[in-house]
Length: 210
Image 1 (cartoon, helix red, strand yellow):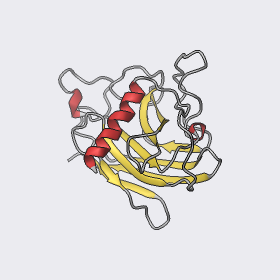
Image 2 (cartoon, one colour; image 1 turned 180 degrees about the vertical axis):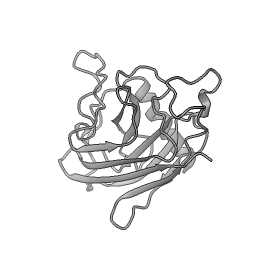
Image 3 (tube, helix red, strand yellow; image 1 turned 45 degrees about the vertical axis):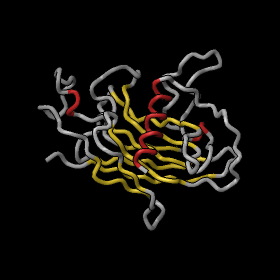
Image 4 (cartoon, one colour; image 1 turned 90 degrees about the vertical axis):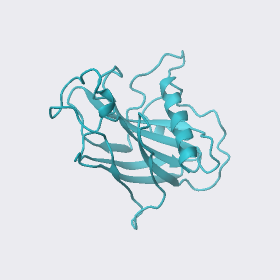
């Protein structure tokens, strides 16, 4: 399970780094209703195994507990991280995996590239039906939701990546950094390529730093 999960994670991060298009190159062959296969939380340094949750709560929602965000550098929220201390803050990402190909624009607001191949830095702004609530630095960071089709696992048709980024997709030590003792919620409705809808209700909670 974990080795396969790490493979999906690396695939997703590679696609993100290459600014992959949000369009879906694969046919929607799966006629089953859309459903969530699992939800995950992992640190972007891969300093620890991802937390994998496959069983929903009684009401159909999902909860990811005990996300380890590492040890903070001195100060409640300093704007830069001193040299040599970057690894103490683990950038954290959250992922929802679906059983089939989904409609990309029900997850992110626009294609990652326009018709000329020019990257759209605002593509992964959550689609109208998705609300992400979590800690941000005002005027610096925001929450994004990105769609990735077709991962190398027969039970996973696509993925939704939820992560914190800078407003201009630039480099900032606070990008993808989530404070200890924080709660992130992802709520809304997505749909598959046939228009079949699926409700999402996910809560992710980071541990308090000892």
